[in-house]
Length: 94
Image 1 (spheres, one colour):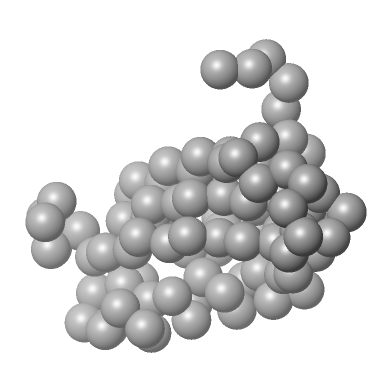
Image 2 (spheres, rainbow, N blue to C red):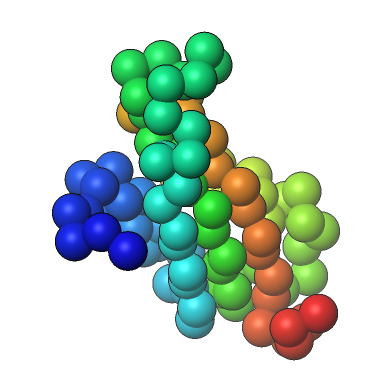
């Protein structure tokens, strides 16, 4: 683990705040993708797991749309990729 913090991680957390997530885990995977041809300007890559009440009674695609709507202007740059796992608290850890 590095001590340097990706500034895009802070921005991502700020943008996701309106979800009022009960649980949010974001992993910066940018170092795994540095320099590949599909990554212009070394944009950031993240993996996020989000548990939020606002996901209740919504299919996974609708949950993901809620997230991506908050990030629309950040993708594909400065955030090049975001792998999402979302769920409502009522769904447990499965």
